Amino acid sequence: MNKIWIITRRELAGYFDSLIAYVIIILFLGLTGYFTWIYQTNVFVAGQADLRVFFGWAYWTLFIFTPAITMRSLSDENRAGTFELLATKPISDFEIVIGKFLAALLMMLAAMACTIPYYITVANLGSVDHGSVLGGYLGLLLVVAAYASIGIFTSSITNNQVVALLTSWVLCFFFHFMFGLSSSAFSGIMADLLNYLSVQTHFNSLMRGVIDSRDLIFFISIVFGGLFLAKTVLSKRNWTN
Amino acid sequence: MSVIIENLTKMYGLQKAVDNISFEVKTGEVVGFLGPNGAGKSTTMKIITCFMAPDAGDIRLGNLSIHSNADEIKRKIGYLPENNPLYGEMAIVEYLRFCAEIHGVDKKEIPQRIGSMIEKCGLDREKHKKIQELSKGYRQRVGLAQAMIHDPEILVLDEPTTGLDPNQIVEIRKLIKELGKEKTVILSSHILSEVEATCDRILIINRGRIVADGSSETLRHQAQGQEVLTVRIEHDNGNHVVKKLTALATVERAMPLDDKKEFYTVQSKPDSSSRKAIFDLCVENKWYLLEMTGTETRLEDVFRELTN
Image (cartoon, rainbow over all chains, first blue to last red; front, side, top):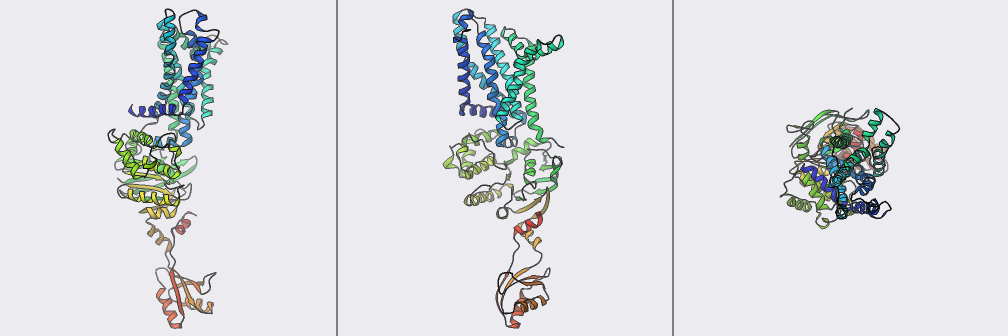
């Protein structure tokens, strides 16, 4: 655990030193803030004291930004050769992967934490369904975790950040939107399957304030799947002929 | 701590990068890997440092094996990879702290370890700079500092002096020699004078195999075998001199040196010396012997002969 934390801390320091952390936080707050409070469909128009509008926009904004945070994590180590340095120190490949994943997650959590004033504002406007707000935030966190792990995986297969970014967008887009969209074109078990694979389905159910184990299992499986694949790619160098 | 390499083999696809190599490095020895590019030096080092697993064979440190005790072995080894990769955006002190923490150096000892590395590697003036702002020589020192931060028993240095200017090369060599007094050092290079200057023992590797093993003197001696002398004798008739020289009992071959008048190359028969006989010959014929020097085989020649 200690070693994972050393990696996480270094990554986080990197995000803040390179200013990418500030850029992401400002863009995230700017976009969600505009759509929540100013754009035509804002909270006041909806006339309900909840954060549905915010969660709806944050869902898309985080889909765009999470891969941007993870794209460098392993691709840059591959490019600069620093991965060799890291791998010859007493730390396992899995610890490296988890350390990087946690850093991305904490970084996005910091961005989300900056939207707590939205919650406080809305709570002052009327009676808020606290359960649904909590569920919404938990949903966002799980969405970010899933995309971060996919992002770490795509970052492990290349030494080019742009390749990592684009492939993770494509992969995440299927979970984010395509599976949900295409489920309506099928019926029966295929529709159910695609529906289950859609992140939107699980996010919506969490946003209602219902914390269902099926939703949690879905997100946790994606997280572990992505991290395991990333670890496997890194360990490939050890495979013998 | 000694390092034992046993029947190591590593394939890249169908090509054997390392082909059944075995050798032992004893405690406190400074061993130089010498070989042309692509000979398998770096691959061997990557396996010793537990970066890659071999296809066959084992490496043991005491009773630790790379197959089952990789973590303990990594703790005992300090490694400077080829091309010295570093995190450019970190400051030197910050980077050294990161390396020390990952190696599990005791928290209380870390500041003192960083201090002593900065002093040993001469980084004091630059210590708060970011690594990407440093010159190549200083980056190399940072690479060495991170390799030694946890006070390892074994140092593996892959081409530690590439890209340095002559002054820096001398400094780094001095540092390596210094380290070699208390630690086992394995370094690689394709610069011959470098291994000659720093190493107790030289291993020449070619196409994944060890082709020579010994100190620089032994290797030179092995390759030399026969004595070769350059002599200068004042005489008008070169052919006559050559004829007389060839007639000597200990001489195998004698010929005029291509471009210089009065100079001759004399090769003796195996295990014999012609120095005295040539002197006597000159006295006998009243020739003036102006020069007589032994030609030493250079390590370059040994290397080229073994790896071509």
